[in-house]
Image (cartoon, rainbow, N blue to C red):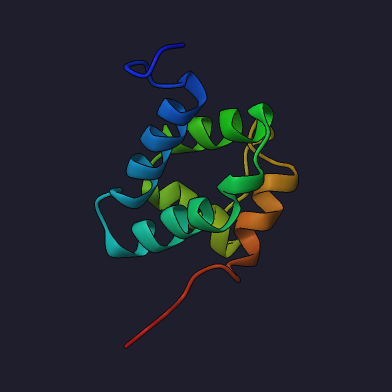
Length: 94
């Protein structure tokens, strides 16, 4: 790869970061973007693929799953969803 080419992993990470923090509502930006900021540095290919799949979902559904008010679809359930549900990565400021 020469200096003018972007590493495919880095490109996916950049896109995921943008899409995670520009959801359309402040709440979704905090939850989805905050999750990305907290965990992406240690992600494997499977973790990033899961997050990319999550990004295709509606904000209202993601928030319901995160807050535990709706059942998580089996295709998204697992370790990453459990981390999302903790919500301990969301920094709330006034």
